[in-house]
Image 1 (tube, rainbow, N blue to C red):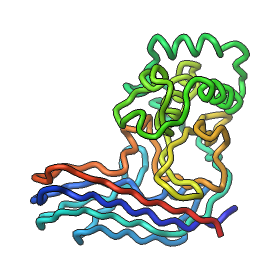
Image 2 (cartoon, helix red, strand yellow; image 1 turned 180 degrees about the vertical axis):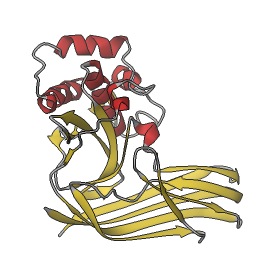
Image 3 (cartoon, rainbow, N blue to C red; image 1 turned 180 degrees about the horizontal axis):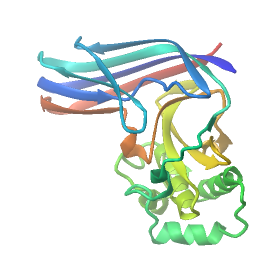
Image 4 (cartoon, rainbow, N blue to C red; image 1 turned 90 degrees about the horizontal axis):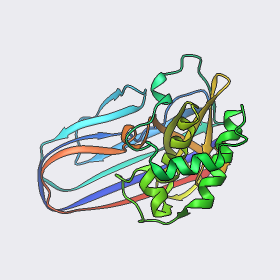
Length: 258
């Protein structure tokens, strides 16, 4: 077990005033088998009454509507989480994790890649996920800014570069092609920067965390925020607003281990 302290700050500045602003945030770590929230504080500016709920995947939502005019929207989440090995028992498997999505559909290049590496696929889903991870890392490089939030797994593979979202989408595509249930995870890991994405693969009645970007299993250095079929189910900040003009977003994240 490990005790992790984290601070997440997001700031969005608008070139023109925002008149009305409705938002949904997924920024609170989950309570689950392998992690427990010891302390947490959520602050949103402009100040308003926060509403807490859960989406269909069990992720924690923070929602509200800001009616005061503003030129900046800031969110700060800080707290302490106790974490362990990222293995989560679950006997009631949701079948949606078996099927491809718009982000994880296999096109020509992904099908070719799967055909090249399918020989020797193990009955052990975690071993298979690591085998696929090594193949992914041999075919794309990590390059910030090389893709966007709408890039699919097929497009990232064709591009030959991507970020953690793309590594995870490609791994999901290959695993589902192999008929192995898997899901997308957004969270944090020890260090500084931004949020991270990885994959959980279903094996012998439990979910196992696999980080294809870093070629490792998720362990006590990771904090889970949300889970879903792909990036679309785990968006950190979604909203509708009136006004605003151009937007400039900055994110600062720090996770330290006691």
